[in-house]
Image (tube, rainbow, N blue to C red; front, side):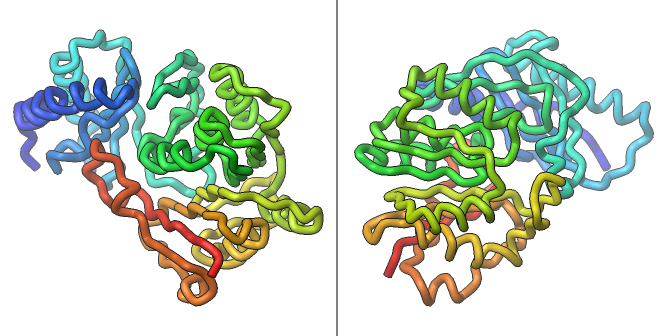
Length: 315
């Protein structure tokens, strides 16, 4: 395969010119500058303040290690040239195909935590320590939507990761929230995000639980929420969970259980990033369902298949 680094560099230059101004107007420190635009350069290039998160997609191509290193060095050099950032601020991740919960696995590097701003909210990120950074950029529009409608609402965030949806809801005036995940690491991160935004923790609870069990207990306790976000992984075989989660198989059970906690006027946002995912027709029979995937993909993402998202309401 032919590689023409100038095609990659030119595209980076074009993108950054337009997107840098756009991001500034939006109040975004973190945004995607390049998303596999040139097929021979299968990378996602994300800006996080003064740093770059450079992820390679696994294409299955085979290159001689020496050729590969030379190719990667050229890519890094082009990114340095176009962004004007020093090479030590470029954090490279070789993306192999994800299996289950590996997206949360440590990389073996420590990296440093630093703060980025998004629509007036602040978030801790780390571009080295895990495969993911602490903030999923593709969910930015849905976070913003939650921020627009959360005032006065009771909010539930399931599979909450580092709690960014909860930060939006709480800072927008949600009267109460619960942020549920099984990972202590990510719940601690969520607490730090809450503290960073000076949010009142007496009204906003961090809950460590297996979501399946949490939903059963919450129903028994007759909990009720006006707004629920559920963004589960495609697959998880975490040792801490009772069951293996397979989102295609389990989504009806999860959505039904979440809907039992939802107020009659409430909304559930359900999303996941399994490419082959299909929403079961039972869900559309039982509830008012609107596919909002198109509106939920940010302007800076070329990849419209990064996730799917639905707005689900009681009938």
